[in-house]
Image (cartoon, rainbow, N blue to C red):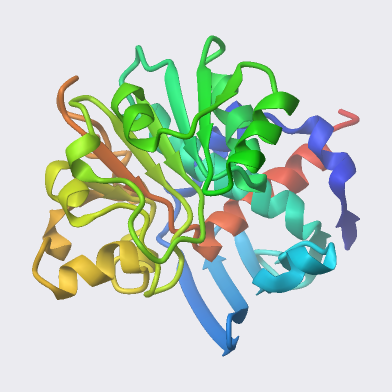
Length: 305
């Protein structure tokens, strides 16, 4: 059993991770189980996954939105990885390392499959840790990408723009949406921020932030206009407000979800024209944590080869 920390990051690549995620989805479909506990706005989320041929994983995450005022990270946790054949504890992997690479890798894989090949203008909605990771991830696949960041607090967007190359800040969200090729939302919003009427043909949306039934980042019109994709039907359609709310109200149906990552091999996870608006909901299920943690462990073990 080993402990794998942040030092492993030097041995990772975004291309390597997206390849590992695709390979993981060619294995038997994952068994997953989630439990969620609440105390007001505080959340404890336990996620487990088992993929035959890859292994088992448990991930415990605590989300305490008030931690920012205490000078602490709002999300913490632990990741344990178990051997596929014996169930023995194989590694304890740094929680934040797995979360960063899983979350950004999930959306990067979707963008590689769904965004137009000529996409360059990327709008980041939210200026937190995930948005910063997405700059790194998108830039790995689009070297000449140009980034614009919008945040409810303009000062946070300006600070992010000042600290990263090729990033500028904006206060006009509607205009930024209208000029973007890729829109990535990474917020804690419970009300839609992106309006469908702002979207131009050919845009790709990566929706990351919403993870509870009460959360939304885009409005009903965006869902009506878009071809909808998810990373996993099992962890998004009935569990996350971005989809469960409009489905319950008859705005869309579960059948409107065109494909998930398990449909990549069959060729269904793709845009059908340059004019199509594509929307990918990143649910970040535990099976993706397992694929990511297994990739990190393999990269760390192979560092001296």
